[in-house]
Length: 120
Length: 107
Image (tube, rainbow over all chains, first blue to last red; front, side, top):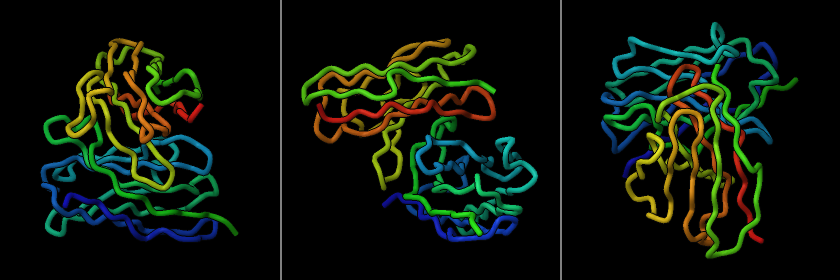
């Protein structure tokens, strides 16, 4: 079965750090661009970051650049998001998603998300 | 950044209705436009990619059209499982941006 399973969410104080993980199974992980997308409470979807198959290219939304770092381990079929200097506005459900093979501009497999709450 | 808008923000419809959702980009994005369906507590689902290509496993009642700045998602005959929020997303340039969503609920 093709699936992505996120973990690592939780409650953290402003200024704190969290590391999210995404375990992939049933898909050709090393051949796929990978994404993090978030949804704040009552808001729409927001693209956060993505990473090329070999990790050589990484892109971030302006609001997280310099605070978040996306990485991957193809040997372990794993994607990560290191989140530092967290702010209240980072509170959201974070989804891991994979780009379509041969058309990586669209995300065709999604996890169910992990919740991050930044609050004192 | 490219801004995406959707209309209407919400709509009420009945099973069997034809539903049309519009998405507009603040600048031309060619056909780099995707549509997703999202239900509360579930993972988003890709419906349409490259503006008009149907994702595998998605029912043929879903269709997409448009290019440049104007795009449309059509559900030809609304089914009970289609009540959800629909988002468009441009993947023409970074940061990739989503529209604010259109919530489709039961009339």
